[in-house]
Length: 188
Image (cartoon, rainbow, N blue to C red; front, side, top):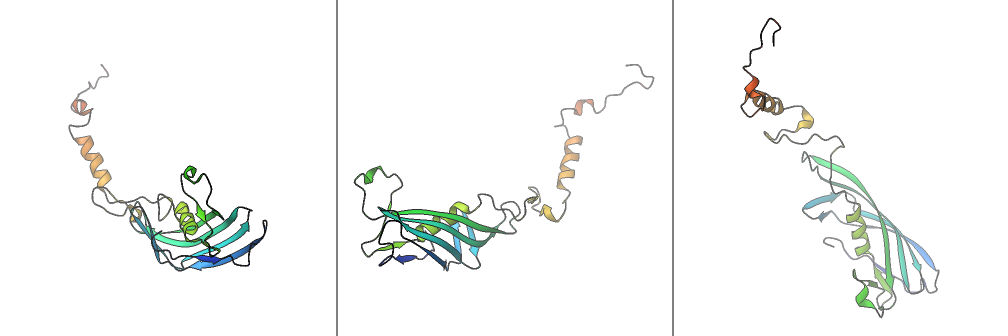
């Protein structure tokens, strides 16, 4: 969870009984985040809107995170904008379970101070809703692999030149037929 500050929610005098719930809205001030090799900027941070519910043996947190993100287009490297609208669903147990080793992904606990930290759930929702391939527009043509020109701005001529070189070259499987002379009188 690089770059995201703790979002600690105090549950003291809240959610005392199973079935109790309350809503919470807030914003996390974060300018950038990374997933793998990619970095993204967030103009207004990340907003969250969640409901916390006492489920008997823990606190269930459900809701949404929203953000406007910008990164580099994976095809042409120009700025690409996209919206994040990820779902949060996290469960914070009141006590450590007896079969704790069976939880492969681990588990979260309500602290002895009766708090929960939502930063992990917010981070997970952001990352899960970040597109694997970021494009400046759905029909982005990308960059020419030969000269590096942005093909969204128009053709560069490399494709036509490569095609003509292939037609004229000896690599063409039909090159042997290039000089074939067929009779003019229709005889084959």
